[in-house]
View 1 (spheres, helix red, strand yellow):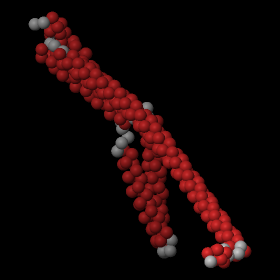
View 2: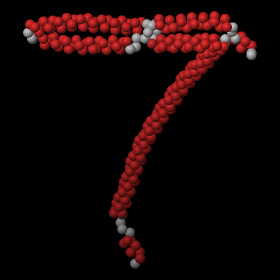
View 3: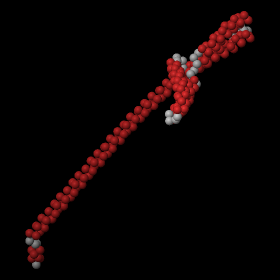
View 4: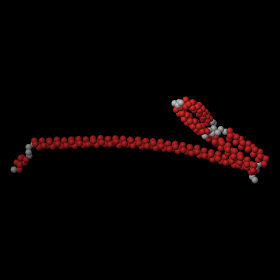
Amino acid sequence: ITETEEMEKLTHLEALLFTAVLENCVDQLSILGYIMPVSYEGKTDIKVKEITETQKELDINYQELMSARQGSVETVTSTSLKSIKHKQRLGKTEDLKSTHHLSNRAMKHSALSVENLRKIQADRQYASDVITVTMKKMQESGKFNSLTEANEREKAKKSKFHDFLIRTEEGKKEIKSLEKQLQDVKKETEIELQNRDNMIAYLRDELQEMKTKMNMESHYMKKSTDLQVHQTQKKCSNAENVLDKEIQVSPSPWPLLEGISS
């Protein structure tokens, strides 16, 4: 037997005393379960269903009352009785509506939501079960190992839950970081695409300007060449005309040559 087991070992009298205290705790937990606010789930649906059914009955009675106005005196008397029932049902409907309104207000103004109530009830039941098992173990062996084991299990659950929260928070931070990186990449890509579009537009303008300039130069060169050819042709034509005139004006050298030869 270890020192811890000796410390956990209780005498029969101590076990009875602790059992009495724990029984009191279980009773108080049971009382707490009874006095806690109950959930309004289900009750509201029942109230609404009652109101709907009563409203349908009132609509039917209203149609009967309207058709009964054209009947005889006996029918009117019968209709009066139905009118009284109609008023009674109408009062019942108003009571149901008032109850429904109060239940809604109670639900809205309740400090404890349905989920919180469920959690509290589950925790209360768990504590009651653990204490009950502890009492049984204490009566049988004089030890309360089950209580310490339950405590350790709860610590382990809380530790796991804490680790889960940490991982969740880290995951959220990582997601935010990745989203920021994605936004930065998208922004850089948009800027790069915009720069490319601007460069393409600039080069397109440059190409168009060069084409226009080349067309103008080509047109100018063609005009200049045509003009030079025309001027050269004109000069040649003028020179031919001058030579023709000179030939026509000067005497023919052939008679002189004939006299010399004879």
